Length: 281
Image (cartoon, rainbow, N blue to C red; front, top):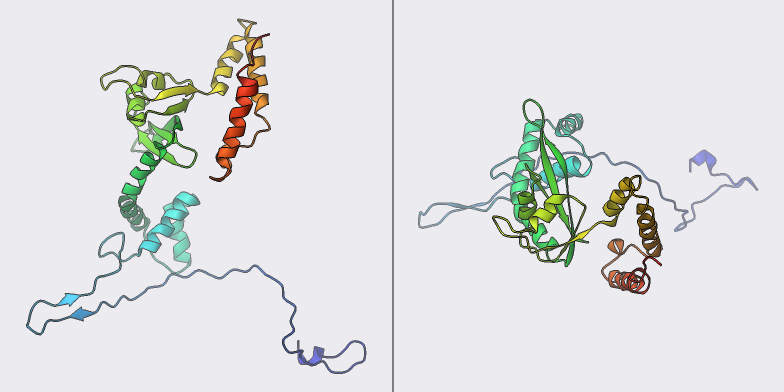
């Protein structure tokens, strides 16, 4: 407290600091980020026999001999892919904070980082394929080149814990076959025919996967057909009743490794006791 405020409001006497006694609270504030130009000094060694001198190794960088650290490249990638901040916008932001860097230089860091991460990227697919059940899907992806955008496709295979994306120029059955590879488990898919083509005999043979189809897409077909076949209403009713059986069960995919088997066992018991015997009449 200021000296003038150290007066007791009751008796008018002076206030003295009570040593060791404080009243604490938390406050959120901002510490301004700064970019640092760090000087790396690498020790040189020489041989008394006159051989060539030896220099201590430099710290690893995405681009050998480059000016930017691995931490900087990771930060640029996080801003772009984690928080959707384009490189041109990052360039302006960093200039405001005192760092002069071109957007092309930022891209060079990402390109070099991608090369280092390529083996980890490939390992994701192997990890997905260790699961006995996976999901597969695809959606269009605009490849921006000079002139009109070219439509490619982002293919995805996913296990409960891991997701693998691959961008390919085709949505054909042969492409689906290449995406599934030699995976021999169960693949949950929508109604797209390419997956069915992939599991049939072809130039590369059939994919060994077993397909399981999404009930939501099955329901959609009956919903579209009910205006022509009123009997579809009964099917829609049954699908709704089967879905209702599991409406209050926990979502196993969001649980921890310890809780997941319990949730899956609960779901299996519900299906065996109620869904399996659910039918007309």
